[in-house]
Amino acid sequence: MSRRTRIATTAVLATMALLLGACAEDTGAGSGSGDAGNPTGTIREGLKITFLPKQVNNPYFETSDNKGGKPAVEEFKGQYAQTGPSEASPSAQVSYINTLSQQGTDVIIIAANDQDAVCGSLTEAKAAGAKVITYDSDTKPECRDAFVNQASPEGIARTQIKLISDAVGPEGGEIAILSATANATNQNAWIELMKTELAKPEYSKLTLVATVYGDDQDEKSFQEAQGLLSKYPDLKGIVSPTTVGIAAAARYLSGSSYQGKVQLTGLGTPNQLRQYVKDGTVTSFALWNPADLGYLAAYTGAALASGIITGKEGETFTAGKLGEYTVGANGEVLLGDPFEFTAANIDGFDF
Image (cartoon, rainbow, N blue to C red; front, side, top):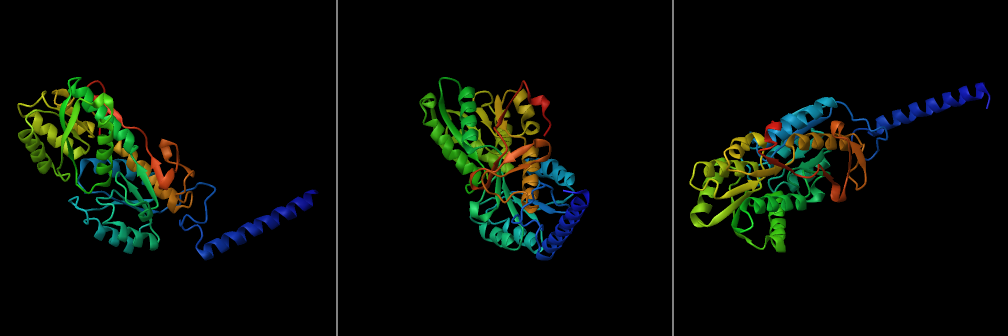
């Protein structure tokens, strides 16, 4: 091919590219619908991304949203916001979803208090053009575009039963579960899997005698922990798979005659439990880094809204400093395995 021919061909291709680009703009392609595709993997600037936690002013969600989600949104030059109810009731999030939809929010990132109560409003938000990401606690798959899971339910259940077994010791005994709300999707899934784990031969000496709910409220969780010891004086351990519950239970045990006699583990944050690990109330507990969870949720939402992924199994995207992730079955993106905190490592973390 001659040089003149190459120049002419290049000019024609450039003109075609411009025309195709103009057509894409005219038809709305590239607006973040996720249908047109985005082979460059570039996140669209200016995306309005709002986090809707189970409840605001909860230390766990303050970390995931404001220390994880917000920095991520700032990295790709989006608009960050957090909103939500002050109490984690099943239907409390519905009005917030409706408002965000009316405001034209590009991405709604929600930790669902109830998998059914929010489905109708989330479906309407999707129809209005918003991408819906669940994190921490999922809805039914059809009600959202992707679910950013902090760890596999099996891994969480397996870790918590192992920790309580190690803490109680080989003699075993009665244990109880102090959960969040009775409708929390993630909590219920973990509890069922913990029961499955307890059925294994290695845990035959552990007996689950009760499951109670503190509704992710500090005072109620404190009272439920107190009630467990009153009703089951031979109790050897408590598993609390909620940051509010485990902190409240630790506070109760540390100031009672049960300290060191009744073991406590579950899911908590280092800053909440540091003093209780050091005074011997808690030997070990587990969690993922909630800031990483919020960070990954923000990038997942941005990838969807920018057309980099559509939420189909096998798709990949890059989540900033966390690296590459692959979308799994039912639109699930897995952060990783739980991490065990003990007296030996807890001072290395600040969240």
